[in-house]
Each structure stands twice: as C-alpha cells, then as structure tokens.
Image (cartoon, rainbow, N blue to C red; front, side):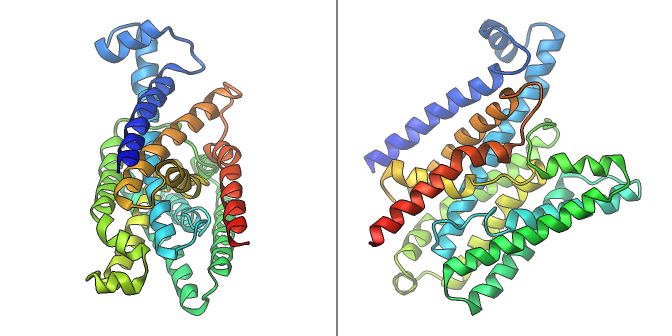
Length: 334
C-alpha cells in the first residue's frame, strides 16, 4: 500500500512537470517569466497570450485527459480478456471508432452540414462497440487468446483500409483534411470542446475506479469472483462499455493513438509492484497522461515547424516496452 501511494505521489509530481514543459516548450520561444506572467497573471503580449492560452494549454489538457483515459481503457480491456497485449488499438476498437467518425463527417460535410463534438463521440462510440462486438463474437468461438488478438488486429486493418479509401476519394477539401486527423494529433484543440471531453473522460475513469473491488475479485478468477457475490455478466458489460467509451472519446477528439493503452498498464504494474485496481487505475491515468503529454511535446518539437503524428512518437517509445514485457513473460514460462 505504501508503495502504491508513493507511486501516485511521484506520478502527480511528474504530471505537473510534464504540464509545465508542455506549456513552456514550443516552436515560438518564450522565457519562463513570460509564460509565468501569462498563466498566472494573464498579462503579456497579445500574440504570446494567444499562443499560451488558446493553443498550448488546451492542447496539454487534452493530452492529459485523453492519454489518461486511453491508458485506463487499456487496463480494463487487459482485465476483461486476461491478455497482456489487449488494447483499444490492437483489438481494432480505435480503428472502428475512426471509421464511423470519418463516415459521419463525410456524409454531413458532403451535404454542407457540420458535426458537433458530441456527435463525434457518439459516432466513435458506435464504431468502438461494433468492433468490440466482432471481437466478442469471435471470443465465444475461439478459446486461444493469442488468435483472438490477431483477429482484432485484422479487424483494425479492415477498418483502417475502409477509412483510408473513404478519405482518399472524398471530394471536399475539408474531408480530405481528415487524413491528418486519422493519423492522430492534438493540434486544433480548443476550450469549446474541453467541458465535453473532460466530462466523458472523468465519468469513465471515476466509474472504473468505483469498480476496483469487483475487478480485483475478477482478476483472481471467475469462480472466486462469483463466490464473492460479483455479477460476472454485469461486470463484463461494464468493462466493455467503459473501455469503449474512453477509447471512443480519444478517437473522436484526437484520432487513433497507438500503444499507450497497452504499454502504460504494464509500466504501472512494474512501478507499483501490484495488480490491485485501487492503485493501478489512478496510476494508469496519471502515467498515461504524463507519457502522452511528453510524446506530444516531442511530436511538436522534433522537426518543428513540421509536426509528427502522435501515434508515430508513441510507437517509437512504447513498442520496446511491449516487446520487453512479452519477452519477460515468455521467459517466465520456460
């Protein structure tokens, strides 16, 4: 318990440092005093004020919320499938959400209409549930979890291929610009979408935290959980809905982000030396937020003013973590 509390405290400190770095660093150089004056006293030049308050702070907050939510979604999916490499990106959930959002935007923009932020979340949630439904149907027929993950990857490829086809042959210039969103990016975040984003993510994470006790029992086996009075069917439905909701919010606002939902839960387990959801859920949220903010900062600065997609950066830094985890698990079986 002491290690878990210390881990949470350390992650909070790292998160504060990551937020400060995300606000301070950028292609437009500012002194620490200028940023301090703008953030706390709302003073400074108009251009600098606009850059900090209207561009950098919303972007950092979005990376914090969506990165944390995506990590918690990955933890819920790994618990549900009892598979260490289960995650929204691997199982095709993010790709399914991307497909329905792109389809909804193409249909509406093609008719001269716009789609609200809530509409994007609803469309993404529908796509996430459809992809999850295919995976669940296969899970009843296939007992081999490794094969099930491969099926999820194939579903993701199909959804991504259809999305690329739709975006490529879309005639409207606004629709063609969906190509950048489909690669994953936190650019263009604004204060207008922040209340909905924060509300959906906080609701999903808090609800997941309140499920810590039944999830802990479920981790010890279905028989044990059932003997402890856990409604297995109800818990599974909640895990599916919450993980799909969180990953749908991420995809709707920022596009698909790879490997955060897989790698971060394992990093947090190594940090806390525990599998208790009571500590892992807040640690996953904090850890996912820290890593996503840092990766987004790298995406902005590595080749500034050209910006990398966030999925490219997260893949570079987090794929080695997943490979190392798989190698260690395989060695433990030998």
